[in-house]
Length: 191
Image (cartoon, rainbow, N blue to C red; front, side):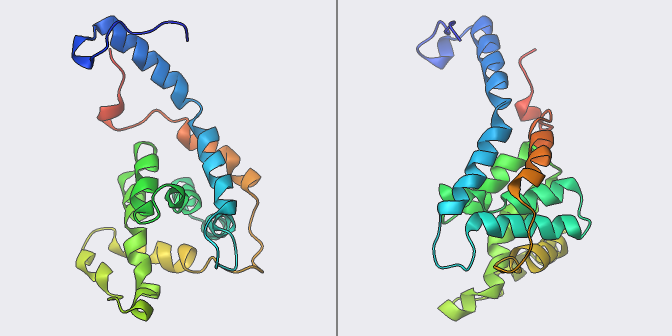
């Protein structure tokens, strides 16, 4: 891109400036699927101590979801749910949810956002914490769906003997969903 906006402060920008930036940002967004896949590949070199890499964990979760007959958005959620570990180890769920939110239904992004809290049920009592912290969300319309996501896909996906599908099997799904027009009105173009 050879053209630049005319401003050095956003408040001085013109309509032409913001149309130019909107076009540039849309072109950049077209590369999002490849950046997501790159972030997933980086999970192969993250947190030690587990019997499988974070990438393999994600592939197992997504494979379990696919084999369970989950819809494409939930399979994608299982694949990317821990992607935030790379940059936000203490709030990874919120980061992953922010990435997926414009492209999937609200229920799926909520599940991704809350899975970190729901997962504490399985381990935090061993560290002196309250394993029932997720109960504060009991009664939420997607509570049971998130609990099922964690039980069936997330907490069960640390098995070095599990035959998960390779990342290449999920690439078309990543490409398709992240190529969607964002559904949230905050992401609509300048008209």
